[in-house]
Amino acid sequence: MNDMRYLTFALGKGRLADKTLALFEQIGITCEEMKDKKTRKLIFVNEALRFRFFLAKGPDVPTYVEYGAADIGIVGKDTILEEGRNIYEVLDLGFGKCRMCICGPTDAKDLLQHHELIRVATKYPHIAKDYFYNKKHQTVEIIKLNGSIELAPIVGLSEVICDIVETGSTLKENGLKVLEEVCPLSARMVVNQVSMKMENERITKLISDLKKVI
Ligand code: PRP
Image (tube, rainbow, N blue to C red; front, side, top):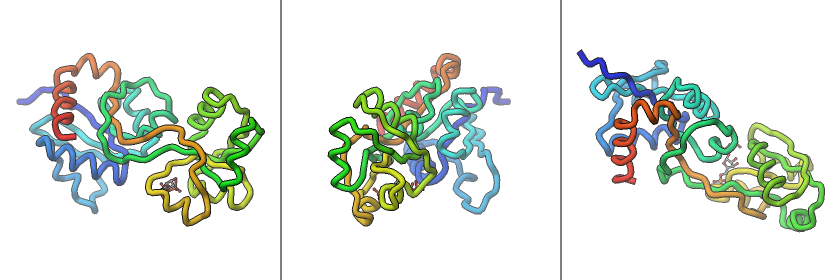
């Protein structure tokens, strides 16, 4: 009987999970039952490898990993920065590339240069706060929204937004521009701090196998 402990992976739902599974397949880690789009199952097992996978909302992935409910998580750098959990970030998976930016109408650029008190709408209040307070030393009012952030400067809720820009088409179609770049983003692998010690051999092998195909 195989009594090796399961290594549990938390994957951020959606595109990130699909790309992660495709990457894992390249290093021989498969999970057939997870490919069934109609399934209502929440947890999937590869018995031979003693790996378990589950899908979670992106912002919950670092939580599962910090508490050790998952040994490993795959999640965007934006979520890692926003959640600020005690976890190890061990690998840049190289996909899901985009940028966290301060955006707005062109004439809002001036407001970023003279330390004016402006309103910043965002789904990422911690990232926005860190950027304006610690990097730019500008006092701002942060307004938390849950999506369609580009609306905020258009309808007059805020002067600028702090949001993810991938292709730039959402900005373009709404007459907005990138005014400043906060940081580059991509999918990352994160590891629970205790798991990193207790399962070091398996996790180190996984990281080195992934590095060969990234
Ligand atoms: C994200 C982001 C931007 C858009 C950027 O939103 O918040 O709105 O994608 O992509 P683009 O530069 O390729 O246009 P998402 O689609 O995740 O939905 P949301 O508005 O609910 O956050």
